[in-house]
Image (cartoon, rainbow, N blue to C red; front, side, top):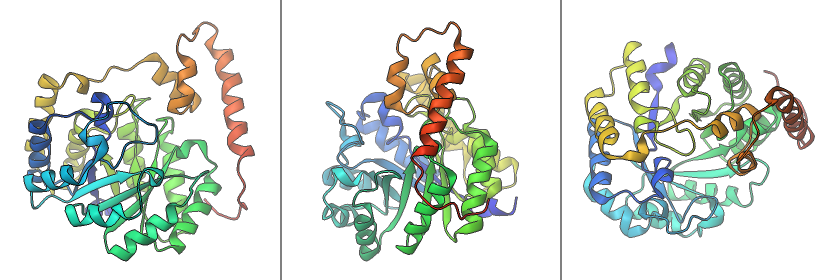
Length: 328
């Protein structure tokens, strides 16, 4: 496992975990998270969204707004931590990128749906002009043909994007699929790859191992896996796994202290798997599509699964528009 020495972790507890509490973490908890993660040597700490997530959330808290004041306050907690902010271009004026940098953000992550990139390239160009580290997060990759993903990443590479995150937003991919996708990108395009797993099928660890073995270097984790839906890759599990393979750059102690505190004091961090999460992952449904499963009749599920799965796979194939000129 030669590539393990190049690994980087972005802890997303305050951002993705924020979905569980409407992004309303108390200041004392935010301070604790930033201090402990910094003490543990976590490479990057994602502190929230700028101006909200993709879909509007009523009464969203400070971690979901990512205001200039909030950034300054978090920066005061730790001068050493490298802070990350995620944003959707449609929510953010391009002039805000420079302000985020000036107020203490070290790394900007731009969320981009492959089938509707909008003006995201302009935001990437501006980030490069500002000299701030940045990356593109490709969302819902399981709903796209592998060639479409490669085609889009190649376009990003031409715009001097150096890091692309593959987000298994639906939590539906399998280790073999992750391995094939990451390997295909690295074989065809000279670019760094990150992986953002979701745990709907309890495969976040297995999928991350496959991504690591295939050459991915950046990984998103969260304390106790706290995150949207069935959650993310658990920071504590991932660091323990890396230690087992001889990587001692992270201190597991502060991470376990955080995990224990969350377990005892942050009720929403104790994730409960729902039947709809499992079925949605099996069917490769997005969060919006999953709403159709509320009150779903599970009887005769096998036949219904075959029918719905065929429909989903056909949609993925039909919306593919790029030339199939890549090798896997």
